[in-house]
Length: 376
Ligand SMILES: *Cc1c(COP(=O)(O)O)cnc(C)c1O
Image 1 (tube, rainbow, N blue to C red):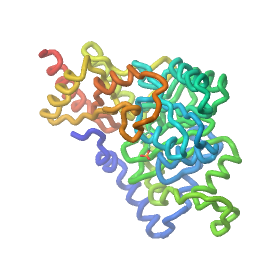
Image 2: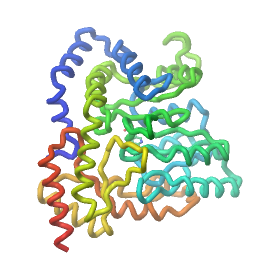
Image 3: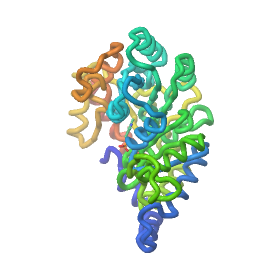
Image 4: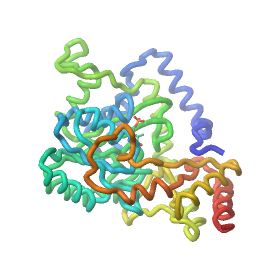
């Protein structure tokens, strides 16, 4: 059994993917081929944004947004304490200061009240300028943008959405990657919509920001590649990756999202009486990058993980270490305690989840979880 079965997905889409890759090789248009523009058009349409600018990976997508806004030393950028490292890493990379905010115990996402408390601490201290909030749509579930937006507006901050895990999620009819003034996502293979290597994209409705992003992803180009008007990067999505993603996007829209939601509902049905299962608030829709349960404590979590491993069931701990405890952030001031994150890092366990997970596999997993927890 695979935690996220990319081989099964390939088997299902093999004819389309093989011919898409062969087509790129035959045309030998490896960089900025027509499939890249086609994918950008389809992704912009899907998310309801004016512009989609693809790039080399999700981390670059976040960094490019920070560059577009000139985020720099002396700026405070508020990020959840419970997320993948890159969300905070890009802030420090630009010389700005990540301020870690605790998360909600049910949704795993940034707690808007804790956000306001952290902003107040920063304002009172008077050393940094609150510039930006980076909410993360963790495990596929959009953050609470209505409340976060209110805090951001009150303190004059922008919102950069980290939708790396959230692609396909929505609140009402509004989709992930449409919630930030700029939004970023990742096409790392294991994300809800993945490619066959590294890839990412930035979304915005601003023509000016889009033009800037298109420039910095190709060496700060001006009107063409060999006229350079600013210091930029080289961060493009390969044509082969875009070609692979076109049929994958179609499957994602046609049935994959629906299937992961069905799988999540089955897990919840089976497990809700014995463990804390994920909470999806009303009007929210998740793309289930992960299905994450919470155990009573660290010992129980580790015992369950060991038990499942013996039965050939792979699980993952997303995430074992709060951001503020990462050694790379050593010495950064902590503006608030993050007890919820501390607890989640001890108690969470993610179960196998993907659109090709069979009902029988899920039943086996649920039986094993029950067998382990009811025995004690
Ligand atoms: C995966 C991920 C990223 C980084 O994406 P890459 O494509 O791996 O660079 C950023 N933020 C979050 C929340 C992620 O899960």
